Length: 505
Image (cartoon, rainbow, N blue to C red; front, side, top):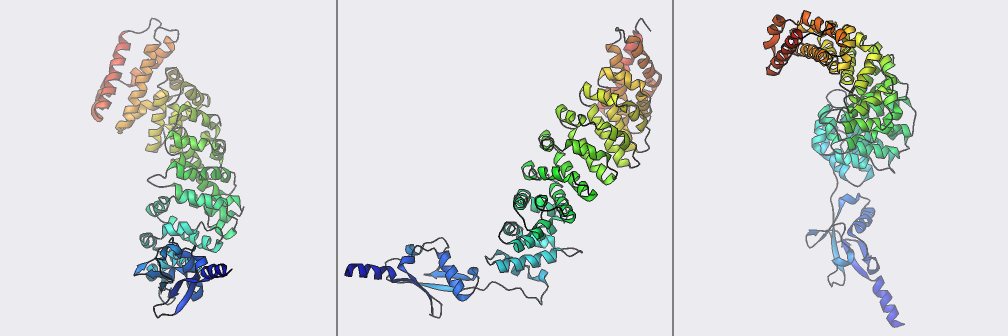
């Protein structure tokens, strides 16, 4: 019985005594609590002092103790171990001094474990980043607090803290490309996306990125979210596909919104993702957005038409299968209207898109023909804008690579259009004109002895009337070695064909 009493006394006996530098005992730790970590003891002392835990440090033999050390491992045979507690006050924000002059103080507050300090610091950072004229974004980035802002934005049980940290992050993202990229490089895209998928607080959602749709239908929130997604996904270097993937399913939903501003930003987001390799393009197609994007080509607003056109154009730069995905959505009725747009950039993008389809399979080029676009392109070759002419030239030169397309191209007036480009002062247009004429001659040569020979021979005669030896010699030295080689090839073809016409001719 007496032994039991002694053992109980040992359990209840003092093992650690915590004193201040002045010698006052702050706390006594019984032996039964020796399982506690230094971090747990610091928290208890912080509660005694009513201070932030980050302001409390334990020192033993002039060594600051680490949080993960266990109390019992500190006992080295002493009956009672005495620890020195040192308080170090975190700098306090001074309301009489401009916040931008107290960035180091705000960093210390943000890095503390006190939620009160964190919210206060995030709020001040958000406010100084919200000024309209020259916000100190670079200073805040140099301060090194962006990773901490992202970390604190994930505190789901602290919506006020999330609200302020996300707002500060969005203010950084709203800067220039390099400032946006600094946040993207912290893996912010997947972090914020995953965070907001589970978030239900309306204030946090308003500052969120793209998953805001999971919790609200408020237009201002959706606009804010899609605009931020667009900023995340733009820029050079391009964010990794893995970083952008979480945004795609949500953008697919946003594209069914009717708000013009929302649609514009959502389409630009999809265009940024699709502007890459076939892997990027396939990621966009896998979300099932292609049909909706093609539908939006017919939107009344050029602000919506432009990113929709860019996205479709990006997709048809991919594989033949990916181009077929666009053609299955029947884009030609909308393209017929867009190619006649009063906006030069839209006409140019339209012809660029068509040039990439014409670089595809015979079946794909046949669809361009069936939609009446050979005649449309022939007319577009007369566009006053040089950049439009060049895309038309690429489209027609690409289409002429398919021998079965040559006669329909000539019949639609495309040969006349390409002949006119030979007289331009642009070596590239001249080069494409020569390529087109060469493809015509090669098609004639390939079918010279067939039943189609007579009809195709008329195409050759049309080439000869314009692409004379004198004219070709005149432009031969306008370009580099590749250009001269192409001109020589055409001259040789013309001479060969002229020396051996088909019997029907």
